[in-house]
Length: 275
Length: 326
Ligand SMILES: Nc1ncnc2c1ncn2[C@@H]1O[C@H](COP(=O)(O)OP(=O)(O)O)[C@@H](O)[C@H]1O
Ligand SMILES: [Mg+2]
Image (tube, rainbow over all chains, first blue to last red; front, side, top):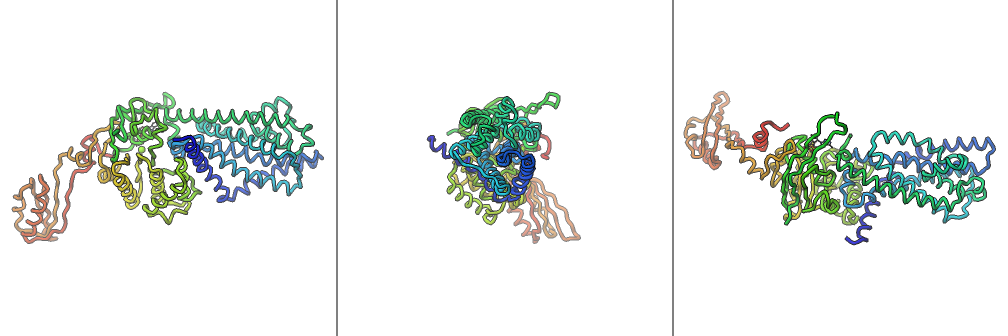
């Protein structure tokens, strides 16, 4: 097979696996309530608090951006990470594993689908927040904004792809990890306040979660005047680190996927239902 | 030409997660099999015999503990990437796919994991849905399907990628007669019209399925292949003669029937109240059947019922294992 034929085959696999998620957004409209309306309540609580305290006006925007980004974090934890676990139960996992394409394509398709679906939710949160709370965002460097967002997503979903194999390996215990990681990351990544407030070292530690720097970068780009005051690192530096994280997580997800598959082939446990 | 499937002393042992959780299980024990290209081959055995384990090894989901397995001459352990291009697998009772997709979308999605061009895939899908009598279901959501419809869809999934070798793990498990027949007919047709190009290896614990459908059958129990041959030859292993039972209207002179050549044993009982005579013949030669029928007519009686009992694969299994099946 030629190289280009191989690429086309794998792109088809990505599209195939992304499709159910993309379609799910249209066929199950109940997500609008659960995934958009409910997060907005938390966002609203912070906004009223900041308003009551007479905080600088960009804080309202910070919170809404954070609220929109929670959608991605929840999607990573509750969908990407546990995906293989559920696919095993339905028998889909075996079918992915015997397919003649790179299993990274299938995993990648899962990420692309999740990303699409979640971008819809996040945009809805953003738009509603902007309208309801009268937020103004300035678009000074759109290219940088797009770059930061895309690289954040690649590294975040790379992390999710890694979680997918790890969760399957560790089974139920790992599942509890999702619970454990939800709220603390809201704090550590600064979903509702600038991460700089945590202090340099805590913020640096939290930066292993790509959303930390991604969110900080987006806030700086939407509010360039206050970037020096509230921004954690220069946006350019954040972009470089995020590119590094993308490469790291994509490699780690491939490694853990291979490890998971080999362990499954040896022990025979990973393709067995209800074990 | 290399065989479609070949195993050499193939052995698979499952170890418990922790030592104290019990002993290890030898699911396959030195299995030697050779399946030629173009065969519809059946693996018949009770639950826990090792059928699924063998299919998992052949489909690159599981490694052998020792021994070798080849698919199209390729080592499943080393050349798994190449093996995967040539195979597909469907299991009975599978709940694969996504409930919110339609039947057609679901089949299309799986075809994409084989990198098949969408237009080609959809054409095949519609064609096969038609052959399975499922065209009216193509736009239904998968979660609304009945068990039989769902399994038909699963089977189509296996064929849509046009594999060289298809592994079917109990494809008609728990299905009603009609759904089973549709699936069996399709499998048979697919293998036959390929003119010895396509191979199917199916597992089953239904005796009749193996008997009617398969060119050759391997009987497996407790991880071992006990016999492997065509169903006819397997049944020859049990030398039970053909038994013929006839219910006829009361017949006066029956003794002549016992003298027909090929009849080894002959008994009769009269049910005078209902005006029925029951005749039982043990035949050494089946050609005696037509002479018996004309003998009954000459004696002035009418045939009310005729039953021929022949050895089944179940008899073969009992003879080989010393116990029944379930
Ligand atoms: N992953 C596994 N771990 C432990 N034991 C297994 C595993 N898979 C199968 N077995 C055991 O191996 C034997 C054969 O199982 P299987 O191949 O599923 O049989 P069949 O498909 O013929 O019903 C059974 O005793 C079963 O319990
Ligand atoms: Mg089985």
